[in-house]
Image (cartoon, rainbow, N blue to C red):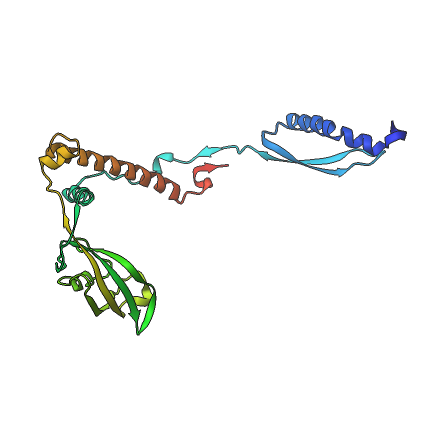
Length: 252
């Protein structure tokens, strides 16, 4: 066989079983508590010579002492549902059930309307990137991201054009526009009167609930459940963010 295929070929075929046997013996003889597969590096394999190889292994850490775990803690807050939380939830619920009625001809924009308009914004005569919208929607019942903008719409009619200038607030998200004058050109295209539902027993019944008190209790419960979930997530995040190195917990 040696003459036919060569001694080196025979050694290569036998290498895996030899290494496996000797590696296991070395692990047991030296009582090495290893994990995972070893990294084998054959250093010498030649006919007439001893086979030499090395095995690099990962060892299980040995804990010699444990620090006082009672000193490791995170802050825990007791969730509370306030009247303001319920009020905001009611407002969101009312917004979802609000009817939009198309305004009649010659109707003017009021603070209780929804307006669709054509919008163009310029700074020093140059159009702003993303500052053009042919069908921009504004709910005058809600806060607008540019203070003073929706007030310019009140009293306008459909088809009416208007140009005006607004100084952006100092804390505006786009810093290059903060405290800068921006010119607006708008045209009112459509006006819708908003009719929010009355928050009473009839409204609760329309949602499949017994009465307004039942709806209020359900909203309180859902808000409390959500706050508890948020608090649990917050505590888990505090644990992850604690600046504890491995050595502060385990001394290996």
